Image (cartoon, rainbow, N blue to C red; front, side):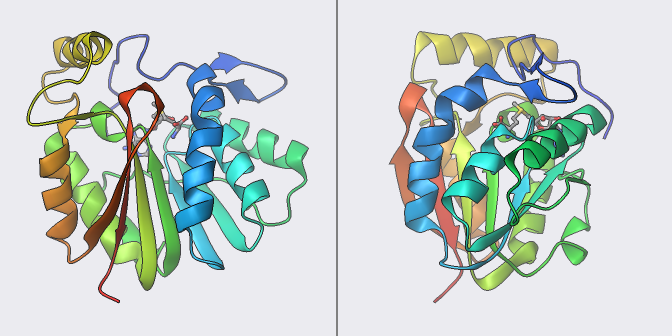
Length: 218
Ligand SMILES: C[S@@+](CC[C@H](N)C(=O)[O-])C[C@H]1O[C@@H](n2cnc3c(N)ncnc32)[C@H](O)[C@@H]1O
């Protein structure tokens, strides 16, 4: 994927200590996301995070869900270094080294399959609709039959942003690149369900975000 230029507010991460990057948004939403994941995650197995960013989230998840083996992934090498630095500092035994993954490239599920949990936070609004559809299709192929998918982020509802701040951010994304921007909740649900998974839960989260949970037929 060619690198997109995004508005400065789209993916903020500051240099912290050593290779560690620090994203204020990840610090703000980590506890609320972890609380839902603890509730919906399978008891044990292999968890994959797509677009792990700085690594702040996955360290929190791995600490809160020690029976899951956590695999971080990222497209950006600086962020992979950051993930590994946060992981090394945590000393957690259930956290693997970050691997390079372009989640919008067809075919990645072949190497990343049989996951009991797949987590994706705050990426769909930064990619195009065809890329989001590829990502969702690969995610479904990578999910174990009993696995669950957790998707967190901002969404349009019936085509509308839910706050002035969301409308402004969506417009700033579109101004930078007309192919990206917030996706509509009903459409994303359709794309997920077209893979054979069902969306079994939609949680309201802080700052107008949603967390969708999907799983296969049980
Ligand atoms: C807004 S940040 C979210 C990071 C993290 N999930 C969080 O919520 O803190 C978006 C992340 O997606 C990554 N990214 C962008 N395009 C990607 C792609 N095609 N495949 C995988 N990761 C991608 C960026 O490098 C960035 O770390």
